[in-house]
Structures are given as structure tokens and as C-alpha cells.
Amino acid sequence: MTCPPLKISGLSLAAMLATVPLCAPATAQQRVEVGNAASVAGEVTLDNDQLRRPIEVQRRQRIAWGDLIETERNAQLQILLLDRSNFGIGQNSRVRIDRFVYNPAESRSVFVSFFKGALRFFSGADDGEHTSEVSTPAGRIGIRGTAIDMLVGDEAEDIAEEEEFVGRVRSDDDEATLVVLRGPGANALSGVTRGLAEVTGAGVTVVLDEPGLAAYIPREGAAPIGPFRISNNGLAAVQDEILPRWARSFSNGGIPDEVVVGAAAVVLGIILGTRGDDDDDPRTEPNSDDTINQSDNRICRNDNGAIIPCR
Amino acid sequence: MLENNFRFAFAALALATAVPTGAQTLEELDRLSDETADEASGIEAARQQIERGELLQALATLERVLTQFPKSDEARFNHAILLCWIDDPQGGLVEFRRLEEDDYAEGALKQAIADCRLAAEERKP
View (cartoon, rainbow over the protein chains, first blue to last red):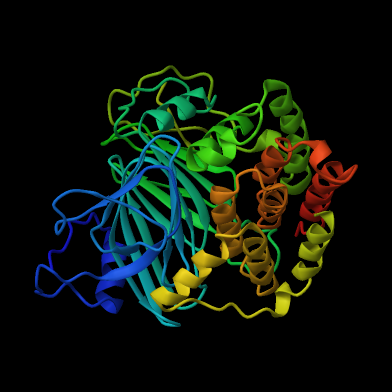
């Protein structure tokens, strides 16, 4: 079998060597099937080294190591893996499951290459050792027991640069990576492991440890900006990319401005009520005294340690 | 439909003692997929997952339902509730605010928003 190229951190590599059968020489026909297409809507294709041309994905399609999945506009797919982890792939996306190994009650590891579009990950069975890692053109996302949304490409750039914390930075619309932790948080119902994500770019890691926290890598070679709290508009836009059919099912086709304003007021009240004084949250606002300059590899932080655009 | 929402709420009470279960075969994954090819059975599958404390899997199940039935009032509502339960009130409320009051019993949406807010406050350490 051909082992797909992987970008692996030192920690992940150590974990993999300890728990995962290494790639062994195998015939070209061998497929390691690790999941299925649990739901499909719109135009979704699958390609791999053994196919002469991409095939249309149907529900129940087996998904194997090295399969490259592509979705078109208004298409979406959910891949269920054997441990019930799942990837929700949104519209205009390209994703490849590089490797998934699951030893029930002992360990599991999943490595995914996410080239463009929208991707949501829900972790599965909460047992044993976990290693979950998503590589994007700009960086790497390490995941632990979590619900997480990720965007790569021009939508990531557009949404991130609307965020006050990020503002205008030098982004590459093929590489820009936006990551939003969705949960579970510390206040989740009992029995659920708290989620955490480590977003790494240019050797710098930003940790997301509360739902609603986000990080943005504007391009390859740039450090992640964040963590910052994503706005309601930003969160809604991310959701629309991941679940486009859901978004378009509403009569207005999206969230009207007046509703977003209303939701923002309610959410603000909740966040203030559950997380203490968010006005003092260092991850909410960048240092406004700085000026924009993201053209070099400097790492700029505000007084509270969050990485901000160098200004 | 609101009755089912209350069923979800009662199911949450069992979470502390729930034992998660995991699929281990591709055939089992197909069965999970088949469940969500029908709106009602998909929502019922999500309810059972909630009873076992599998909140993230329940969210995924509802998203499969919403892929096939994006206008499912019950799936939309319960998806938002589950976001609140995993401590993502911002996400839950963004979704609640998209729903139409007329699709639910009078006051249901407002009550759900209030419950989301209250539950988050009650779980505050």
C-alpha cells in the first residue's frame, strides 16, 4: 500500500508509533476501509489511486485510506468512521482521509488532509488514547474530544477578515484556515469530555479551549491569529458553509440582519452570564494601538498573550 | 413535536449513568446511516444516543437527518438544543433565532432560548 504523505507533529508521531501498525508493503489493490458515506446530498465525488476517474458518492459508499472526497456547490456529505467519529464535509470542499486506525477501548488515531472548503468534526467513542489531526495548506489542527468547525480557502478569508479581532491581514485565499471550537465546554451536560483544539502554523500553537473560540491562519508560513471569540455573523456564515442545504432551507436563505442583532444581544447576555466578565476577556479584542503589518513572520501578542495581527 | 423536545430533556437526566457504545463494523455504520434516511427514525436514533450520553453523536445524527430533510422542524429545534447542552449557547441561539415561531407551539422558541440560558447558568462551576 502506498502511504500517503503526512504532516505529523512530534507528539502525534510518537503516539502513532506506539499504537498504530505502520504502513506495510502491500498490493496496489488493497484498500483499508474505515468508514462510510452516512449521508450525501448534491454532487459528491470520490477519487483514489485505483480509480481511472472520480466516481459519484452514494450513501453507504465505503471510505478508505487515501480516498479524496470532493463536493460541489450546495453539496454536503457526512463520513462516519468505525469509532463513530464523523466528518461533516460542506460545499465546495476537498478532503482526504489519510489514515484512521481504531482499536476499540484501546486507541484510535485519525489523520486527515483538508485542502479547501468546510469541514466539521465530531469525535466518537470516548475511550482509550486518541490522536486526531487535520492538516491544511496553512497549518495543522490537533483535536481532542471535541466538536470543531474548520474552513479553508476564500470563505475562511472572507469570514475571518470580517472579525474585528483579525481585521485586514495578508491572506492567501487558497491557504487561509479558520478554526472554531464548538464544544463541549466546561458547562456541558455531564458525561461529555471537554473539547480542545491546538491550531499550529509556522511553529506557533494557539489553544482553543472554550466553545466559540477561534483561530485564523492567514497563509502558509504565518502564525495563527487568536484565540478570539467569533462573532454571531461569523459563526452563522461558518455554519452555512458546512450545512448549505440546511441554510438554504429557510425562507430567507440566511439570517436577516435584525435577527442576528437580536441573537447577538441574547448571546452576549449568556456569555456574560456564564463566563464571567467578558469585557475583560483578552481573547475578545486585539490591541488597537498597533498597526497592520502581517507581511513578515513576527509574532505579536496583546497584553494577555493572545496572538494578534502585527500592527 | 414539542412533546418530543421534552422527551429529549428528560433523556438528558440519564446522562450521568449512561454508558457509551461504539460501532465497530461497516455494517453497523450502514445501519446508522439507514436510520437517518427516514426523518422520524433518525430523530428517534438521536434520542437514544442522548440517553446513552452520546451528545456529539446525536448532533451528527440530527445533521444527517437535516441533510435529507433540511426543513425538519423537530430536527432543527433539537439540534439547537443539543448545541446548548454541549455548552455552545452561541451556536444554539444563532440557530434558534433562525426558526419560525409559527412552526412550534406558542412560546416554545422563547422558552428554549430561556432554558438554554438558564441551563448554562445552572451548570456554571
